[in-house]
Image (tube, one colour):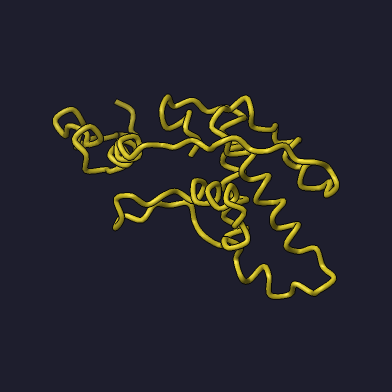
Length: 161
């Protein structure tokens, strides 16, 4: 989810672009963007992709299934790296720096177009993620409806009085 949605509940076109970027990263890596519940310090897919990209090790993240039919004359690695690059541009922390959806699609289609360097992705802290998970939990006290205020019996008569 886009950080502005997590923090403020704002749904915008740029939040959709963020989600599209995450989807691109999931396709390239073959991994889902979810944090492991077993590790307190696990990073999101966006952060892992960002770190690998910055260190010049992005190819380590590629889904091996994408590379199965990578023929010697093919530009498959370049194309997959480009998709990852566009995914990182779509997941930048500052929404105004993210491309529009049409621009993101244009960047994917035009293989010879120069791509700008992405800025850092949002580093959503654990408290924000925990709070978001809390409100998704149906048994959380704020999500459980008070049964005293709900009518439990109703009777409808379809005959005239």
